[in-house]
Amino acid sequence: MITRRKFLQASGLATAGLAMGGLNAAAKSMTTYQTGTKRKINLACVGIGNRGEQIIDEFDRTGLANIVALCDVDLGNKQTLNILNRFPKAKHFKDFREMFDKMGNEIEAVSIAIPDFAHFPVSMLAISLGKHVYVEKPMARTFLEAELMMDAARRHPEIATQVGNQGHSEENYFQFKAWQDAGIIKDVTAITAHMNNDRRWHKWDTNIYKLPEAQPIPATLDWNLWHTTRFYHDYNEKYHQGEWRSWYDFGMGALGDWGAHILDTVHEFLELGLPYEVNPVKLTGQNDYFYPMSSTILFRFPARKNMPPVDLTWYDGVDNLPPLPEGYGKSELATNIPASGAGEIKETKINPGKIIYGKDLIFKGGSHGSALSIIPESKAKDLVSRLPEVPQSPSNHFENFLLACQGKEKTRSPFEIHGPLSQVFSLGVIAQRLNSVLYFDSRTKQITNNAFANALLTQEPPRKGWEEFYKL
Image (cartoon, rainbow, N blue to C red; front, side, top):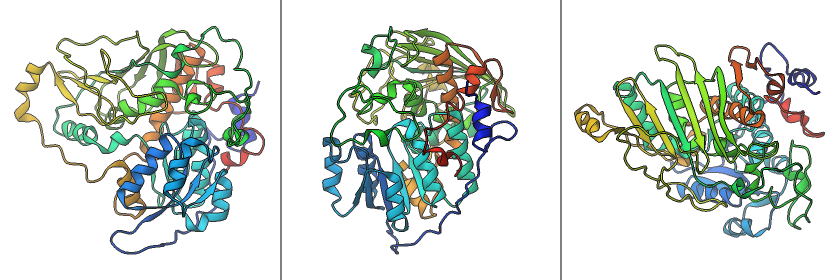
């Protein structure tokens, strides 16, 4: 069996605990291409269909981005045509490595909107070449990849990094900190996070015993390149156009997809870090290949500074609703949720969000930066006079990144902030996959009670030709 330790040793990455590979290539100095108060950043976009198109729209809307390169493994398919036609001067590539090789001196920053498993190699190469990085959430698929990405960013503080949980630049980000500073949010001991809408895999057969049968590869698609570091799978439509999110081999399920939009502020401002225990309390339809029909996962975090221990419980699945406190009232659906290939998120009995239990107060909130409210309503009315003023956001998430590229702001969801939350998701996914309670030592960054689970912190080594990205 290929163990995590053997892989780290073979890669030259092993040190005490979880190993760190330094960047061998010195970051190249940036070239300023435009001057003036409205200078634009030369932006290359990797992944230009579906969510990638939405991200490019957002960057273009800021007036701060100059789109110089468009890269997609399915270049020319219908989901990429809008962007290709809108930016006729941008150069086209299927392979991000070729893009950087041919246009490196013209690129200042890169946006990455591709499957979870492919975030790592593009991000690492970009940072090694001195390019600012905006990458969709979750930041990485495995615990090790998130660790290496954080290390790369730490080694190059001049490079701006931003993870695409856009609510981190919206109201809840500023509200949470203001309420915490004012002593409104304090002594939190429990958090419930919930996402109970339909998911892509909910119509699939959980008695699965093999991967899907091979289908013809679309003519426009470079299916081999699509895999990047992952071992080759025969093409099937159940992997493509967002379906990859359903599979342990490629995506992070409901937890990685939605946890970043629900748990970002509680994780950052409560300084939760990494859990010492992850318990898959309930898994329905659990199998070896794709995510369960429903999951209840308990994450236990230790005391931090002057804050008490926290039990965080995640609920997903249509019929796996969390318990609601008295006076919960109506659950509002966030208004800023982007549409996806899986369709619009429809309003349900309880919409995606969180419940935060403090010593004296209970808070409820939605996803994607939605504001918190105090429950029950009678308690909220009593506290109106004590609530502090919440600052307005000076920039949205995309403006924030581009301004950070210019040195005018700091990104709000850099790798150092989002990375540990991405690792929390990786631990949760391992617990789902193995249907096993995990005990985690945050000092050594090892799972101490299950050798198979510990090996999954790294997964199997990358396929031949992709090892270099773990050594950059």
